[in-house]
Image (cartoon, rainbow, N blue to C red; front, top):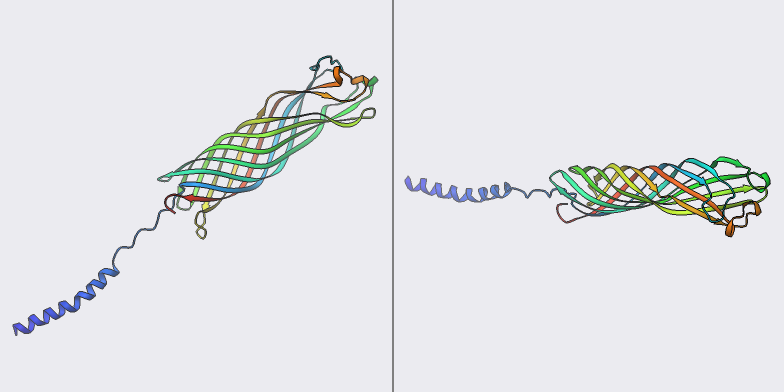
Length: 274
C-alpha cells in the first residue's frame, strides 16, 4: 500500500511540474512601458497672425548743412497694423521629473504696414505759400526671437512660458504730394528694432506620430529703435532747395507693441524615452 501511495505522489508531482512552469511563465512580469520625455532637440513650423501698434515722432528741423527751409515742431505718429505671421523654430529641451527647461530661436515672416496723414497736415511755408501733404508710412518686416523656456509636463501635455530677446527690421518713409512738386517718396530710412518678448503656450504629443507635437502659443513683443536722420536729395524746387539739394527729416522715439497668436508643430529628436 505504501508503494502505491509513493508511486501516486511521484506521478502527481511529475504531472504538476509542467503546469506550474507554464503558470509561472504566464505570470512573468512584463517590462515597463517607456516613459514619455520632452528631452531632445526639436525643429518645427508655425503660422498665425498678429496685430501691432507703433508710435514715433517726426521732427522737421534744420539738421542738414545749409538747410533752413522749414522747422516744424515734433509730431507724434501713432499707427495700427495687422499681418499674417509664419515661419519656423528650433530648440532644445531637458526634462527633470515633471519640469521642462529649454532654449528656442524663431524666425518668422511678418509685414506690419500702416500709412496715415502726418499730423502737420498741409504745410504752407515754402514755394510762395504752396501747400503740400505728408503721408507717413511705417513697416515692420520679419520677427526674430531667442528665448529661454520653462514648463510643466504631464504625460503627452506640456505647458510652458518663455521670454527673451526679440527683433525686427523697421522701415519709415514719407510720401509728399504737392501741386507744384508733384508726388514722390522721400526720407526713406531703414534700421534695426530690438526689444524683448514674453509668451506662453502648450503642446500635445501625438500618439499616432511619435515625436510630433502640436500646440498653440501667444507672444507679446516690445520693440524700440534709435533716432535716425535722413537728409534727402532731390529736385524739389527753389523753395525747398538746401545745400546739395537736401531736405531734413528726423525720426525719433520709435516703439512698437506686437501681439501674436501662432499654431505650432514640432518634431522632437529624443535621446531618451519616447
